[in-house]
Length: 156
Image 1 (tube, one colour):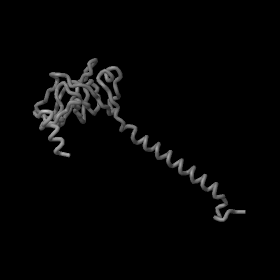
Image 2 (cartoon, rainbow, N blue to C red; image 1 turned 120 degrees about the horizontal axis):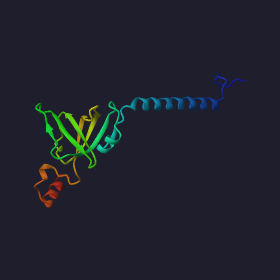
Image 3 (tube, rainbow, N blue to C red; image 1 turned 45 degrees about the vertical axis):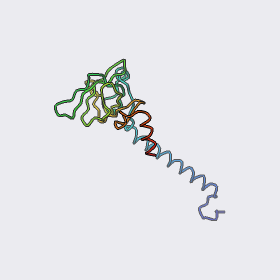
Image 4 (cartoon, helix red, strand yellow; image 1 turned 90 degrees about the horizontal axis):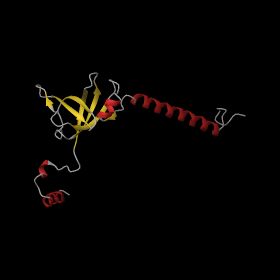
């Protein structure tokens, strides 16, 4: 005899089939998402990693390290900047065309996002300057610790 719904399946079997279809759809969506994002992953390298194991020229990576002192050079166009990133073991020349962050100075930490060129120069699309744990806003640099605490207390 057929079940009441006219489908010929018991309710338990209908739920199992529905669950199986839902699982297949979820797994398919996850595979599509991973496949679509595979080229969006940006790997982090320090200069010694890049020298030891060069990434593919078309792979977007992040290069992190310290800006070598005396290495910042701005081209005549005023926008293109050349500098060297080092980690104490190796150095990588970097080229960036754009506005550099205000915290970008020699001897500071930097993360450059871009691709390694065939000539070994890292061509950055984006620069992220890092500050140390003792960061103080410019407006508060000349204040004593007590004055700074008062200003912070007043802003709460």
